[in-house]
Length: 407
Image (cartoon, rainbow, N blue to C red; front, top):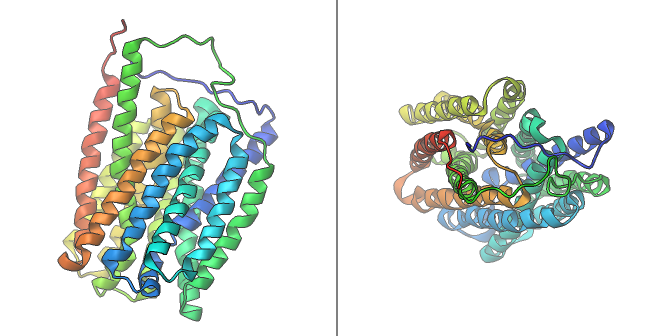
């Protein structure tokens, strides 16, 4: 027996039209998630000014958001196994909107850090829910839908810095930007509260249940750990690049605040385009093939920025390439995991715990060294993380190909 088993997840939603409505709802929720996630990077300097903090101090905002993401993922995974999923997602969206509206009003650093912690919790719970419920809804055919889901996250992440840039150009402040983003999220939350929820595969088994052998259980647990480490490195790289690239551009004298915001938008826009193109590719190529190409593209893009640190064109090219190459890594690895183990809210939560930990630690490291070492520390830390990511991917591929001896 090997670990490469295909598991089917039948949903309690039998109507094709209803499935479409629910899928569209998840995509809209991920647009909202992208709007919230990408707002911090281009407003980092302004938030530091609001709270009279240094860049080193405000970088704890990334840590707080990621820690909240970790907690929200861990708790949310168990919540979706016990409650109807869509009302939970709708509630998280309302809480995200409220947090976004409050962020620009906070003038005390520790209060802002606490609010970002809560925002991260709500985002983490929403993210776990969308990924888990989509698998329950579409089962083994989830691959293209998963890439589409994360494509719509990219749309939100692309639009968010654009809204920030427009409002900065118009008024010079970030409060209006955060309030516009919050208002855009509210209608999606209301819609999610009204949609029916798919059921867990545990509630509607496709085949008679047979307890797995101890060796298989141990192997599945180890695979969860390996994939969680993969997400630790990948999410850390994505969060660091997307979150710090605007500050990097300004510190390296490669653009002003508006240009830096548009640079962030290019990163998320390239990620969105990559996810759009990955939808048909996910239906034709093996996940491992997509993942290898993505990781190599990421490395090449970061090397372009490192090789020509004073050339603005190299920064634009490297930023676009990094976003485009990172596009399908997360959804493809989720689909890959679904091919080799049963996906539940609990297992998905562990993936997000790994990702949140990376999103918490790696951008924080950049913040601690940014002012003392210089802006180049950003791309060098991202490069190191991506190299380790490629090594971990190799370990995972070898692991799933290794036969498991049943007792």
